[in-house]
Every structure is written in C-alpha cells, then in structure tokens.
Length: 283
Image 1: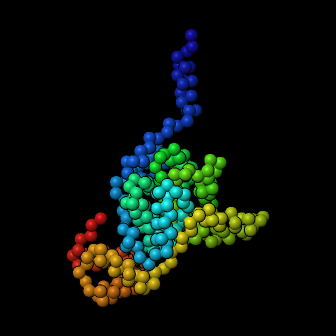
Image 2: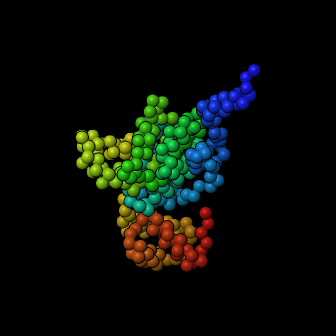
Image 3: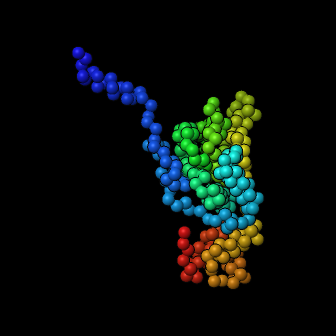
C-alpha cells in the first residue's frame, strides 16, 4: 500500500509543474481595460476619460493618420502598430483615446482599448498570449513609453512588434506615446556606440526599435494660432460667456506664465477660466 503522505507530496509536486490556469477573459465587459500582470487580470474601465476627436485641433495630419489606421483595424482590415512621439501636451494620448472612441461610435463594440503600464512592458508576451484566441479586436496602449540605461525591457517590446515565431495576433495592435523619437535617451545610444565592438550595429539595435512601428507620427509645439484655436474649441464646448478678444488676451497671458503653448496648456487655461466664470465642467 502506498503511503498517503507520499501520494499527497506527489500530487503537490505535480500541481507546481502544471501550467497556470488561463485567466477568465470577458472582453465584452467594457470597451477599455487595464492590464495587471500579477496576478494576471484585465480590469474593466467603465468610462474612459477622453475628449471628442473634433476638439483636437492643430494636429490635423496626425489625427488623420491615427484615426484612419484605427478605423481600418476596427473594420476588420489590416493596420499598423503606431508610435506617437514628440512635444509634451500636444494630445498624443488624447488622440489614441479619441480615435478608439470614434471607432466604437462608428462600429459599436469593435475595439477594446487595453492600457499597459510602462513598468509592465516585460509582460507583453503574456498579454498577447491571452488575447490571441479572443474574437474581439484590441489595441494595447502604453502611454509615455521610454527606456533608460541598463533597461532590457525594450527587447520584449521588439519581440512583440516583430511577432516572434507565432507572429503578431491578427486581433491585436500596439500603440505607444513617447516624448522621445527613438524611445531611448541620446546618451544611452552614444554609450552603446562608444563601448561596442561594432559601434554601427550597436546603435542600429537601439534605434531600430522605433522602426518596428509601421506608423510613426510626430507631434510638434503649437504656434500661437493653433493654441488660440485649441482654446476657442474648448471654450465653445464649455459655452463660456466671454468675448473672443478677451478670451485671446487671457489665453495669451496664461501661456506666457506657463512658458509654452500646447493642447494641455489650453485645456488647463479653459478649466481655470470656467471656474472664474462660474461654469461647471462635467465629464
């Protein structure tokens, strides 16, 4: 007769060797989710904080490219992974969320937006594995993505963008925003160049990460007229009781104090102005 204690130990050992059970995934529970890798779960987001895409002014070319790519994907067609890079506060992440909302408005339920934190990039392959068999199309979104010295997570991202031996799932795209054109600090690339046996290959390894995004969209600082257009658009949406000339004068003063002009500065100005005028902002 086999010792029951021994049987229990064998059973416990086999449980440790068994692959982890697949997490239950219901991508119909919401239109957006946040990825939590430990323990693995997709937390539904009831309401995505986004602005209407018509309010994103001064970035017409960028808006056209991202919206067209997103709608293409939502309609079941092929599309590209996208990187939105450049000036701070010019609406990169707002555009991703607005394009997602527009796609679901035109084709209800077509796209799920899944946010992944920068520090969880190494778990991208696991998230891809979970999403691969799902019928719903998904955009994985990482905001403010960049890599620092001694950071090897970029290799996991390269593997995902390349698709590996299985290839990228047809139902998944990856969108990222970054203030850096190549996702790496310049000194990181220079250090690789100075210490490598083949400097050219080392630099190419770092810079080529950006090349793996099929759609590469740059954002630049707003000029004064674009800034005023942003302010006017937000003010009109909020129905602020203020004359155009007074609005421009106050907006100019605000940007001078802030030391720059951008969509973020315009929105912050309108929020402040709405409070001063006694207008409540909802949503």
